[in-house]
Amino acid sequence: MTQLDQFLIRAEALLARIESILPQADPVPDLQAASAFRWRRHAGKAGHGGGYLQAVAHISAIALSDLHNIEPQKQQIDQNTRQFVDGKPANNVLLTGARGTGKSSLIKACLNQYASQGLRLIEVDKDDLADLPDIVDLVANRPERFIIFCDDLSFEEGESGYKALKVALDGSISAQSDNVLIYATSNRRHLLPERMSDNATYKHTEDGDLHPGETVEERISLSERFGLWVSFYPFKQDDYLDIVAHWLSHFGCDAEQIAEARADALRWALQRASRSGRVAWQFARDHAGRMAK
Image 1 (cartoon, rainbow, N blue to C red):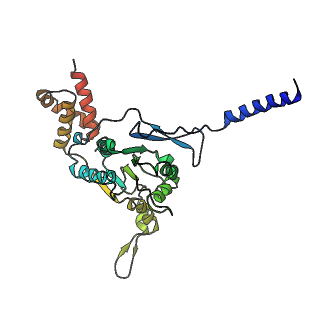
Image 2 (image 1 turned 60 degrees about the vertical axis):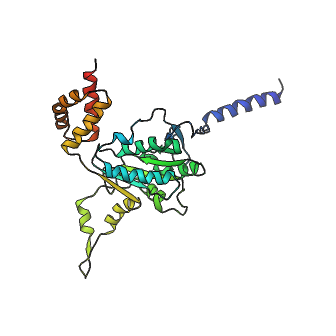
Image 3 (image 1 turned 30 degrees about the horizontal axis):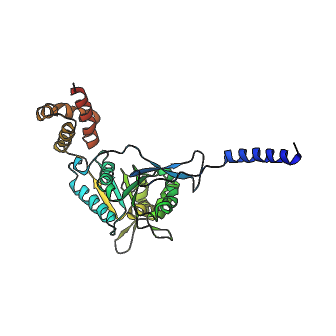
């Protein structure tokens, strides 16, 4: 074996070792094969350019008709989403309020309603919000319409995702792509924790007006960048029982069985100190499962 042959063998071995540690090319997603995707980061990779879209194999089958006692909220979100799918002007949306009242379910139901018309959903974790520019660039020239979905969103002081989301909503030199909207849910209206000390930053002017200080302005600045605010409220007892009845019927219970389950449904809610739609769904699954023969 000549020295040249030995050199080539060693070079090939070195190249193989280098290739094994280089990042692999991200899979190109088939945006027609699924209607929902998750933004995933490569393990141990920080900064921009370190993620890819992963198709969601099993999507919640919830429909708009399954969501009861939130008609005003449902109408607002459905109208905004329909405008977006039709290529008309539409707003980024912040859904806030009581837990378990249908905020996330409403977004999933809209996806199911309009997926056949080209609507797609990309779920992004709070920790990955710095990648929003990369996500938008990835889908900006696609014919589909994309909702970037941030669920249960809230921030603590100093978290980087806060500023990244502010810029993505309204604050970058580049305009937001016409085929992308951001829908976020949160239990907090202003997304940042509010403290008693914030009240000290308010200032009185000579004419008696009250103005918030810089700390308060910063807390509300992100929420204000969402064009549409939709608030959700705790359910009354009759609303809760109506949702229980709907889901029991969905699981095959008849009217008599639903009536007999009323007291158990109220006890279930009392144990959890909540009459939310989520609690109603959980009770219906448990009760229908025990009743099944």
